Length: 144
Image 1 (cartoon, rainbow, N blue to C red):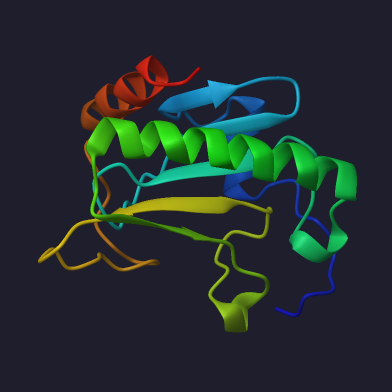
Image 2: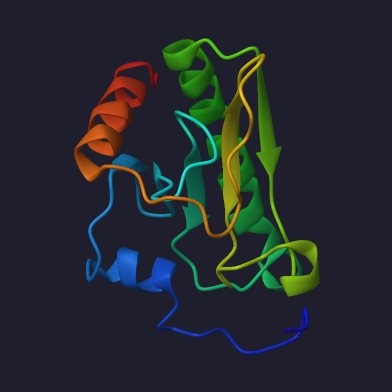
């Protein structure tokens, strides 16, 4: 799939935004939804997405990006405070060759721990939903 294309309103994140698929919500407002990754690469792996339909960074309105990245920073700080990782990777993919698997713009906040291997980005094991809800609640507790 190239960077150019049409937005698929049936992608998994669009379904989550519509409430068709449950999620472990970390934060939500009129513009942003943040939730736990169902296939986490590490404990505390959190996603941040705009509510505006957009495939990637290149087709997103700059005003949406400002809200998205500023909220990503705030949520990443809460993830850091909650899980006390040795580091945090914040990543965003554009196009299948770059690793994008869901074609709705999103940022990954991935806590990194010394001596702990990172799980697979696509195709890892699905996490226990109750565990994800508990992690989300802990992160919410540390949001300003």
